[in-house]
Structures are given as structure tokens and as C-alpha cells.
Length: 232
View 1 (cartoon, one colour):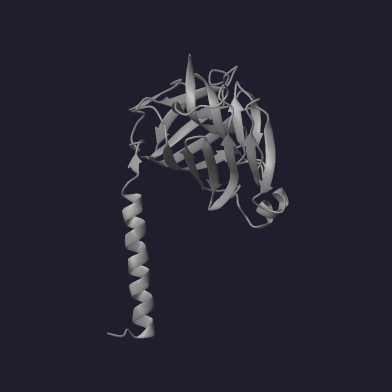
View 2: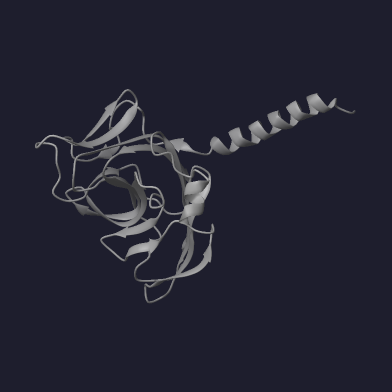
């Protein structure tokens, strides 16, 4: 049987959509869009409004002297894929994963940068640890001594990512984070921003908790929605 070219295009589109739906079916929502059930953080700073999870510092009674986190209490992340959307006004935030709970809503570990700054949002940081691990556009190998070494490029320069519109400064952005063993990838709006192999047996983490950050400093607002997790 032969398809008319137009029908064939439609058929291929339907098949592609079915594959996408099948893949997405493996992702489970971990934010219910109604309240903070399953999440633990400073109630002065975190709330849910119109289906959106909001972290905000504004008035004197809504500030933080140190970085503070909203921690997901639904389980421990090992090998996983995570999707979420974020929007940020001012300030600095992040997605904390495979991390430790240090008490009083403080965390340490891998952090995917959330910041309203072109060329910087999307890098990999380690909170209360080895700090800067990979900048936007870098492929990195972290040695047994804990020192990162750039081994390749995911784009010509950070300017290449900016010119191609990898970050929407005024609207929603989608993070896609993949962690398998010691291999980490972070994608932002379809652009792979970092790729890291962490060969540091003392510094790396192969499991830990998930959290969302509010950074100490000037008043800020960060919003999240569509938080989906797939365990591998």
C-alpha cells in the first residue's frame, strides 16, 4: 500500500507523537500544582499560587540570611531524568540534585544554575563543595583529585548559545537533567549546556535528594511548574 505524500507526512507525525507520549508516560509528576505536599521548606518563602510553585523574598520578614531550599521528601535520586520549567525575576536560584540535607533547609551537592543571566544560567555548580564544575558549553572530566578539566566544547563559545536563544529571560524555560552513574548532562530549552564525567570518588555523589533554591541577597522571585521525574 502506498500513501499519498500528504497522508504519509501526517502518518509519520502521528507515529512520532505516539513515541513521544510513550516516553513521557514514564515521567511522574512530583509537584501536584495545588500545595506543597511532599515538599519541605521555609513556609515564609515558598507557596503555590495558580498552580505555580513560587519562591520569593521581598519584605523584611521574607528574607534569608543564607541560601535556603525547598526539599522534595518523596525519595532519593539515583540514576534519573528530571524535567521542570522555571521562570525567574532577579536573584539567583538552582535545582539541587543528588544532594545532602544539612538541616534547617540547607543542602549541599550538585546544582543546575537558575539565574536571569545569559551565558551563566545552565552551568553546573556544587553547593558547599567543589563549587564551579562546568560552565555553559563545556564538556568536563573531573579527576580523582576533584579538579575539573575541560575536554571538549558543546558550542563555539557562550556567545554561540546566547545568539541561538538558549535562554528566555522574560518567560518560561525548561530544564532537562540526566544523571547515570558518574555521567551528568544538563539541557536548557533543548540545548545541552554541560556534560560531565565525575571521576572523583570522594567528591561525587551517586545518590541524594532533590531541592529548589532561594539564594541569599536582594529580593527575588523564582517560579517552577511541570516537575516530572523518571527513575532509570
